[in-house]
Length: 224
Image 1: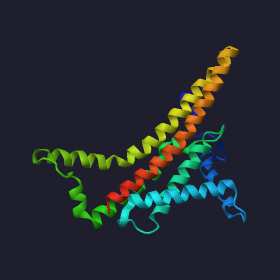
Image 2: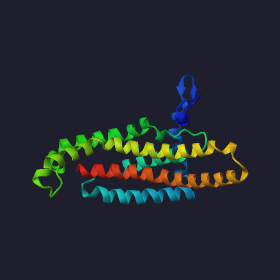
Image 3: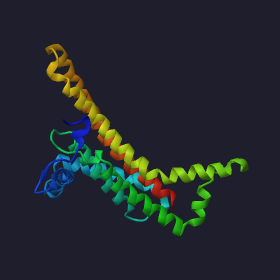
Image 4: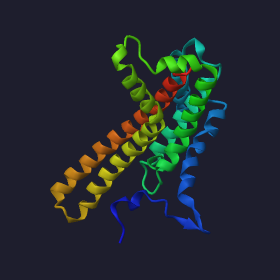
């Protein structure tokens, strides 16, 4: 007997190794086409996306951002996007739906931002705990609230991504399991619903990778 969440389990074992996580590196198959002499439409599209992201992240980081720091956030965006989109194909394990993967991305980022901020800009970090214009009586509460919001940032980043990936895949799985016992008319309706949900999931895959990268950029700009 398997439970409902067994579809998300990395349970493919060959030579006592979990092979499912190798799907994380499927995005690397897209890289060689960047080096073709005549660029493909995919290369042109991807280059335009990277250029636009670079401009946007540079604006978010402001003048205080270090040169080349946008490349880190573009790489994170690319990795999450490839994983999310690949996970929409049948029999490909979605590693971004597991907290092991999302926390491994969010936690080191958050720890490095906090260490950098508190070591180099201690006064600014203390000042950031109390928003401008806060009444004196509310200052202790605001410090507690801001401290908690800072601490849970890595958790919210990782849980948001994993929960959105799980929710869509779970809905598609639940609807797909009801297919065998349906009449032809209802089955036709179910197929159209599944296609609409798949389109929605494709949009969610892009949006969630973008949100993760943008929030990481905003968190890094706060500590400068």
